[in-house]
Length: 165
Image (spheres, rainbow, N blue to C red):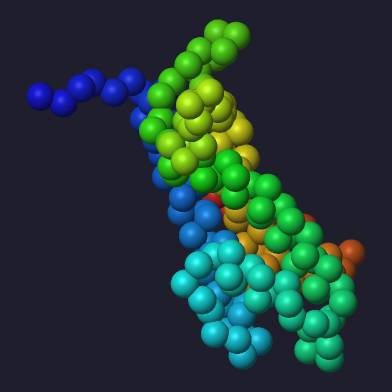
């Protein structure tokens, strides 16, 4: 017999799955960008990030695009620490100030002295997914500011409109 899962636990499980999927989008964007530049992708993300960072600006890779990718890589490294905790730690639930949060203890970061936990609200988990989507877009398409919208153009759709209900 299966345990009954509450709706909020189900919602957190979906958010966790979305984080994993959105991170895969970043990984694919990095590999695609490397292939576009004639560089073979390596098996590990860290290797591909190093290869991307090593590319020098030039006629087909502007300084502005390189700077945008460097900033995205910096953001990715920060966000990736959270992703590691989410993926390498079992999900438990805690109430903080009357609100349900997911709690992850990354098994790779446990020491005999202490266990550090990452505690995230559902909103924080959804924001992390959006961060990964944004980073995938910047890595794949370059500097988002380079895409100019003329005053007569309608504004681009919001992330909420793209994601749907």
